[in-house]
Image (cartoon, rainbow, N blue to C red):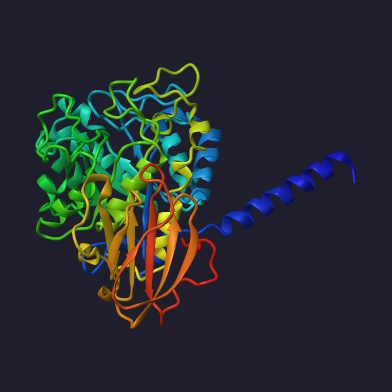
Length: 477
């Protein structure tokens, strides 16, 4: 066999191997499109299969990454457990990508956005959507960032919505996001026009509104016919850090309590699923603007994730300062970002989120409710607050600080309960034994605060969701 034939044969083998690997990648939409569960608390697939949203804020993905980088990024995201990428479709007027092609003009005339033989802005976005599809990942499209609202009117909003819906309505992996880091009372007629233009054409994909920090979409749009689930942005402030803001209405010294936004959203009628779509990012300064301030760490992003989900959120979105803007040498960074995005993807919190997804998916999904009565006696405040969630025959309790806690094991079925600790940094399980059905105190040997968090798992001993022999929470899609 000559050299040319050898190279050709190797190419065929590589192509076959890649195709075989791709065929084994879990495609969640194989279970049908996403719909709201019958109890209005979760997103599930048409066939009833659960969907745990594990998102990442990849805001500038369409602008900053070339084709090869898109392939690398989305492949890594899949292996890290992420199944939703939140992106800004348009960040400015006009928006340019890494190839120097513009997406739009000030008139929002999309009749000539594609030119024969030109790999333009929208062709690149098509490519991103397709690569995500191959990796089993949804693209949550924030149509235009809220900072551009003053340049928008209802006509332009409807034109954008119509263009996007026509282009992506047949893609299986699309989620729509209206708004974009903005208060919902800023030109609501524009957001309504955009949302309704999309929904007129695309009646398949679910939709939400991405609001300003420390607010929830439920305050403004919960009653909208186009709203499928609510989203809040718990934001990047620490307790007591107002920075002179007067644009949000939460109690003083509750800035980090993202579980409160779940409660706020569930107070609205009709009841809708809810998610924290933008909590504090890993490696971003606390408060954003003072680059000398302490930075949020892996244990902080874990706390935001477990607090929100155990309070009743149907999933969670993670973020990293460098990755959300895809920083690299030579680019001007915002918010003090320093690491190239490909190095930031190795940070600990980035790679710990998947254990939360696996944990939730190992148990009955839609019956799960938040239940703080599981915590016997007085619960703690701030970092000492313990958050509990349960199904009919299992309970999960997140303890961030490491303080002793009293747990009422009678809140779920079963005369006896099998109990484990799970370490959220690595998914490691430690079986504690079988316990009587009563209030029991639990503690573990760890330093107080900062990386001491654990999840207590208690299950009716007649059930076998996880095994006593499991050393790590089993992986689930």
